[in-house]
Length: 109
Length: 118
Image 1: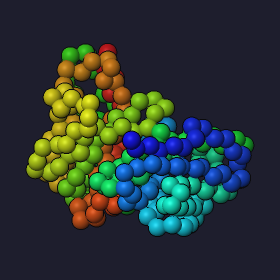
Image 2 (image 1 turned 90 degrees about the horizontal axis):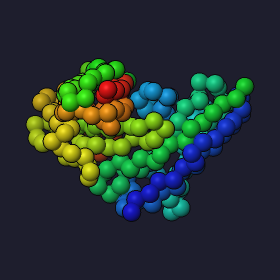
Image 3 (image 1 turned 30 degrees about the vertical axis):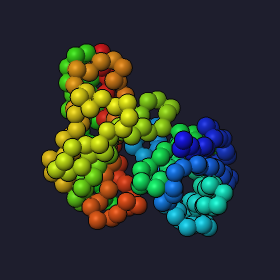
């Protein structure tokens, strides 16, 4: 079966750095997405990786290793507004998006 | 960026009634739109893929006669929850991918519609 694993919840301090991991086992791979979702709101796009390596976009970076079936989202200089759920999603061989359960990130002052 | 508008944001209805939710892409055309439901503290669950001009493709376990999807134009898809029951209470979200952006194009999400069935 297809499976995406990410931690259920993480806690970090304002101003710090946090890394949210995502491992996947899917039938084929056509890219991995990270989305941010604040409580009660729709998800918003953060990043898309299809090649190995690190992609940086401001305070957020996303890394992919296809051979390991692994990705992480790195958030630097954490702000209180970064408190949200972070969803990892993989595009499989049929171009279907397989969603992880999401990681709830709690930022403390 | 591209905008997807979803309406209504909140709806409360009596058990047995039908509710229609609209999803519009405001500044782009979308051949394909997606409908999800999300229970509290859980991830998105894809319900169906809505294709303009053809029948929707439903995910396993989703009743197509209960969740009617119509994609009548390149900018509008509707989800009708027929004969709603309390267990249908959920957060329903649509997303759309601009036509021509390919299967890996960015998805743009509507604001979501919170349905409460009494």
